[in-house]
Length: 93
Image 1 (cartoon, rainbow, N blue to C red):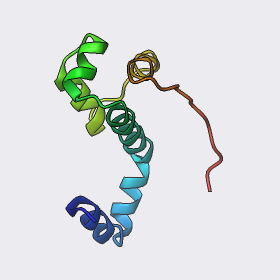
Image 2 (cartoon, rainbow, N blue to C red; image 1 turned 90 degrees about the vertical axis):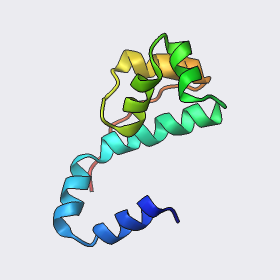
Image 3 (cartoon, rainbow, N blue to C red; image 1 turned 60 degrees about the vertical axis):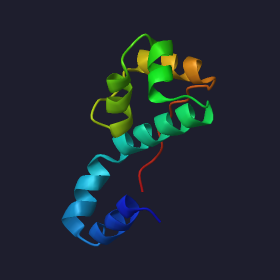
């Protein structure tokens, strides 16, 4: 388990941390899926940026969750990584 995972596990015991994390869950999930699509395509951030005609720092911001990509950007990322974009709504628990 990585250091970040260990910290998350430790901090998750704090109700306030869990509440704030849950508010950002979808952003974290988008970032995780972007990283997964890029790495499975065998691309670096710079290579993906070139395909998207943007900068490596823009890709890094998407992957960090600091910037939320638009639907059109998500479509471009899917095309650039050879994946298919699927968006869904699921019932909350």
